[in-house]
Length: 295
View 1 (cartoon, helix red, strand yellow):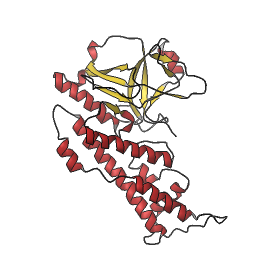
View 2 (cartoon, one colour):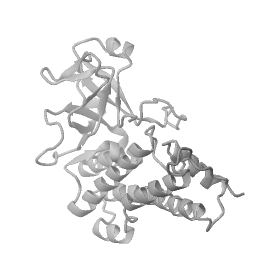
View 3 (cartoon, helix red, strand yellow):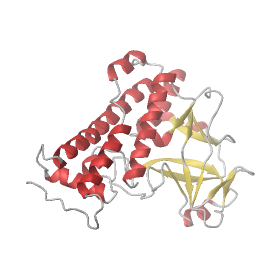
View 4 (cartoon, helix red, strand yellow):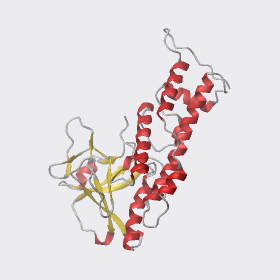
């Protein structure tokens, strides 16, 4: 069914012209699909390096999303020019773009995000750039955990590398965590495990002086967490420490359909953070870590 598009009042640009320009702008920023054959040749499946498999799986997911975004924008431009029929799906893309919202067609193929359209596109391009850097320069020293489409595969990859290196059954392993003093970069990879960055503390802040959770400062809702070292090891050998088991979520919604683990699909893992207060203190404040903010 043809969609009747109304002119904007006041002699400004019509809604068609606004969407045409916006579609052109986004299309100019979206890079080509990842060349999977080339990447697989450079990063083949290797028993001792699970990250190669993680990389290829991520690129497959991102290619699916990039293709959907690109094709919908090409189609919406054609529909505006009257070259193709404005379907109900394209109508939704048009209406969503008009109000700065991520179209449902994109969201269906996307990682969870609560960002408005402009921020979403910026975030998507940053994620693509993270993987382009990985392809060009090798496995990162510090992983931007927020950049992954499916974070559990990364966590499994880190654990698998350790299990295979030390010949320990993977179900015996867990993670210990160390928050580093460095905020964004490290000079070299850790001997075991992985460095991650990109997390935000909600409901508290990270006390950089005493390296423990601390009360939020006035009017500051989120505090960036420095680099965290994920240290795999045998759970039975972990020492008891005074920590708050802080859940990590992909978005601030903290909800989603329950997965087979019994957790929300928005849940990533729990990181134990040093605390001088009893854990209940932070539970009452609803303290959590977020992979991305809403704006």
